[in-house]
Image (cartoon, rainbow, N blue to C red; front, side, top):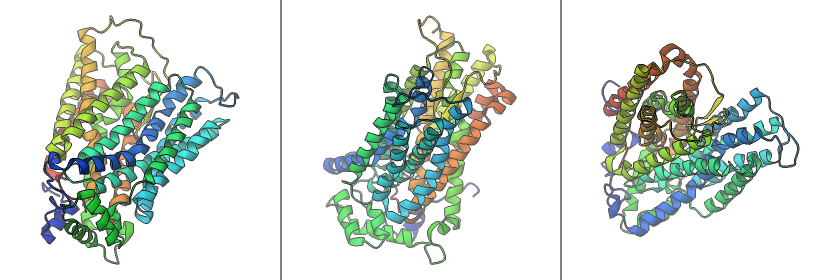
Length: 511
């Protein structure tokens, strides 16, 4: 690739067809405030409806937190029987969901193209509905493990189906904001699970998830199919009707439809059908580029920083109770996503990523330097059992809770690492931690969007799993300070990667 930026499918088609993709299907693509209020509100409601599944899946991601807390005090199930889990079963209850997530990526990639976006949104909830019901009625650890695998499968499917649908129904001028808005619903679900789960037992929280998943299915039934999918499956008349309703009477929807057809006909000869088309050179380049972005996302500390937040604060003399630390961290991440939602379409993806990586690089470098010069640089092997929901990047821990009776330890010296750690997490949530998950749905054409998105997200999850497996060796080899300097170096290198290789996808019509 040299120093050339990888061209997206939109750029190639625009150059060949002469279509103005910035104005296709958008009144004033560069400025969302010029969109008619009714049109903007209509699209926002559609996005929120399609993204409703993120609330229960966000709760499912944090369910193990509630389960570990309550089973430490009582092993009773909903029927009153006692359930006993050995340590390896407790670990598997958390980690099996991640295996289910990887299966969900591939499953959604296939079905979103085969049966359409709307039906796939309903299908997304079904594994978790069965899984949640199984967990509610579970009488032993193996049944819970099976339910968690099904829960994780829905989480992976949700990322692919919701991102695909939202990117296709949104105007170019607000697509990024709507994608971030949908991801915020998952964080709200995670915060809700940790907050309410402190009082309600784990089986009741699974019952709440089941009810919300059923509600999602009812809501999706009121939605229409994606016009992009209809246009690529020879249902042009219906696609035109839906495009006109979405874009408004003033938009040239015939021009947008022609663009969709041209974009998806390109490279779709008989010899390249389905997933085989992903092996064309331009799609392979896109996959490689996005894999690099996921590498930067993971090894700039996006997961490790969040997973070990509680441990780091305790090591530095801030023994915050795990529940409050998790809620506080969730609020910081939510705040970062709110900021990103407001600016991602105005500044563009590249500028947000560069700003985000700059914050992460500065925060991690400062944090490593602080740890090095304060002498808190020793490695203590596994002081607690920490399990990652790496799809959400928030830690669950079975460590003994530390009661906070006073705040006298909040000195300037102790507050410094807290501020730096939260700065790094805020930097992640304002760009590299969120935008990476949206880019695949913007860089693959409609006919390959679900498959390409699923493969890229699976690669991202595998990289995340690898980073966690390498955490202890990195800490033992590099020390705490060295590990944070490594995160800073990757983030710093990511700035140049984004600048020279990543093409801007903001305000570009997805094909």
